[in-house]
Image 1 (cartoon, one colour):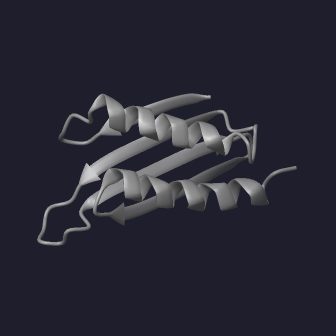
Image 2 (spheres, one colour; image 1 turned 180 degrees about the vertical axis):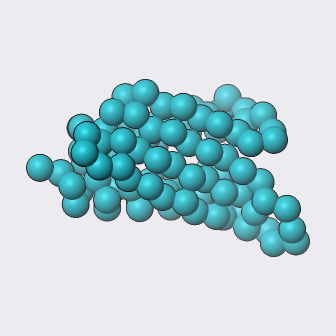
Length: 94
């Protein structure tokens, strides 16, 4: 599975990138037809502590999965995105 990670207006460190790749690879256990994922990492401006946003588009032939979550850290947001995508992937599993 191909994974593209875009960190918008900042440079994500290597450990965060690896954490995201590991989480996305786990999705293949629920649906092995996922071909690629595109990840967008953003820090939203404002006073809210939950300003880290993770957005993931996953492509399965004939269907796209999408999840966007906000949390206090990218890792926490990625955990929530992973859970949302896992539920979606299981629904479209043949």
